[in-house]
Image: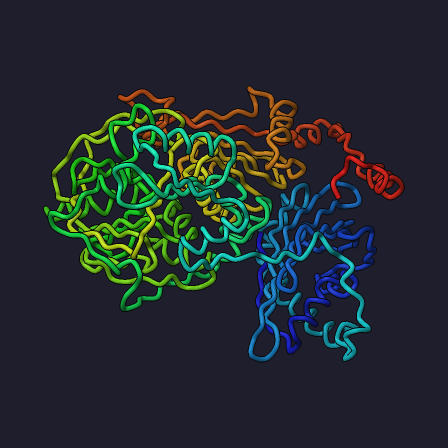
Length: 638
């Protein structure tokens, strides 16, 4: 059941923020809540009386604030049980503030789950009351804030909020002007190294990028490549730190929620008349792809692959919506590139529309873009989504785009290179094999071919390339983490109690939940497989006390909580990744999905009237010890 209400109060956001972070003030706004007792820096207790039809019940509640984002949002979890333990209630709550013309708009949401005697009888009744409960909350809120102490005129006399769940987060820069500005920032941080000595593209770039990635080393700028006319930067986003830095985010535990916050409203691109990407032009017989990027990225690649990070921009023939996607591209001649977009991608589906109409598909391929465009181009989204709108939202401002010569398809104006051309219908050429993000070579395939008819570029352009491989690499981060954030956003909107999500490039998803009811983990698995566009093969569900960003913690949950006959779900013959090395060539495109419920089986303990095992983390003793010994423990980081 979801209680939801949006209303306005004639107070400043700062005043309302002080009100919602004071449990004594905001608590009684909840219908039936009383006897509030603050028991910790982020917890308080209360009592609630509930009437459902003829049933009356009194609950003891504990409210835990899980996240604060001053001065705009408070997230909390409410857990309670009836005095007789005949019913249990869990609620995930949101209070979100935004300035309005006459004060502050307040959004209140509470996702409620009920088990026990009230759940059996009263869930339908309470669903009907959801609207009136939201209205009653809003009415109480307005009345209490008018007479509240936080409404005093002397704001200095008002104490700071008593509930805090971490430091106020100040996000860093994400609106990079272009790739060059980002490279300058990396160089200042000591995270970009220039290699001025001539390198052989047949093997040396392969070796240097491989060593750099494995060592979690800096980005590499190759200034003198044998046989090429232009320099190339590689390993640009090849570490966790550089990927997060490009988005202005400090750590992975903030990443998914920050992605959701930024992309609540898309920002469409801004069309400009001209851009640096069109400062110089190459066309006709002067086009020679070998002189732009002639790198052999892996020892047994079938040739040169300049399209390891090129973003293919296409426009739907039927709906006119742009798509941006990263697909491998193999140099087949001076002006032809094999185009390795699988059939389940949106770019390839655009091509199918043109091919069915016996028409050429215009396409522009860009490379050397600002890092947020890089991330945006790799994001797996549902059909009909223009990724450039997501890119603008992630940057916090519109992406400047200019019409290309490929049927006017817009391209990012500050790109280093733009390749304009067409893909002809009913024409295929063999491209590949190629060393892929799976850590294995992908086989050669018969694929469409991109005919490059014109190239525009900046003055003194810098090509952007990447060595594909398993983690660590640019592609596993850019493809995996952007799609992870979109998948988290989708799953969280479908199933209550989803707290965080960690995914690799496309095979594994680990989801942290606050388990609310029997079957909850399995419902989350179904949402991951059925609701997202990422085709994850394995889904692992863990409890809220597991740190999903520490694999040791995840393995602890797998080792201790899983009983294979009960907790492992196998779903054969499901749509998979073409490059999955676990699937033979004749079965490519299929996979068997495996879901593992690695949460503690609390429902079974409760069914048998037993207590769940107690954790040995002893937080109270640890806190007490740190109070006495904290400054004496030399091995602890400050």
